[in-house]
Image 1: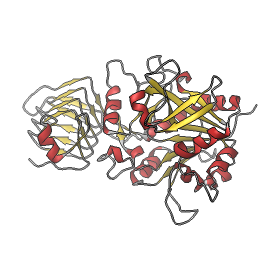
Image 2: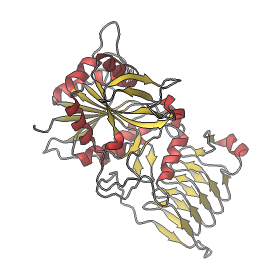
Image 3: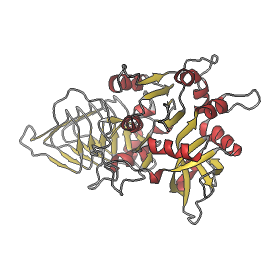
Image 4: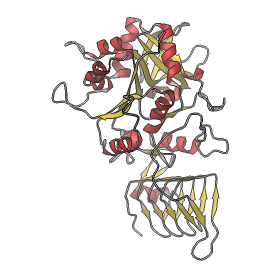
Length: 408
């Protein structure tokens, strides 16, 4: 059998309210991650490595930063008719924005009819993971399903934020519970639920038919409407993500997937990168994560102006960053960050272009782009004072919004 013709549709139009203030003026998939990357780079890199190279990214809210990143980074060969194209809400079906993820596909059915694929991969843009989507497509074709849903076990206490799947022994989905307050647990394991990852493989005609609304019951959302409807039709199957094998990946990393939809989950996923033996390995060159690389000099670690030595441990330092006689521990330092002498940055994420003044103390912080932290500032040490000026997550992470100039 010849390889199927595959079109990839990446859903990148969500508001990302739970990530504010990081999403105050950028789409959630455009939020920086791991110092150098954007969140969307992980999904796009999976398809690039799998050589599925016809990709459309459906955007809507605050999309300029995302559009610019994709146009600067994600360029394939035009001669081979490969592309990554951002597609804004065009109101092709009337004067309205996307009403949900299924409606976003319905409003862009022309992309499918123009390309005429055999298979359509509909994936989210805001998760951190490695996956070979070819294996999921193969599984889908072998099962004869109309749609295949990628799934992974999650703790029951977290499952209320996901679609939860019940399936039979053959992998056919028999019930789909979207963000249920009392989700069913997995057979033989009352601590975990089988959660949808928000990644779907469709037969093309199945997708076209299900998102094309009738007048009585339009389907707006993939998880809330489309997958339950296809489950009732008996054509939905589950794909076990833990069986996915990625070149260069060890057993410890297999099955790693993080939804970074909240400030705390975003912070924790970043911290996963800097463990002594990281549970997500950025250094796997057999399945690279691609992103935009600016023409910046190497990272520099030097003594301060008064000869103070620097100390850096358990951290990522990106290109163009300078640690000058300061202390950096278990932190991610993004490109073009300057950390002045006697500053201490502990358990923190510092984004591009930030300046950390001399003598400053940062602990368990997320410092967004181009923030100016003055000399001797204290952030993350006094929750009451921090709450007057910054956003604080439920787990106590202090978030300083993009471009903020903190008073001395």
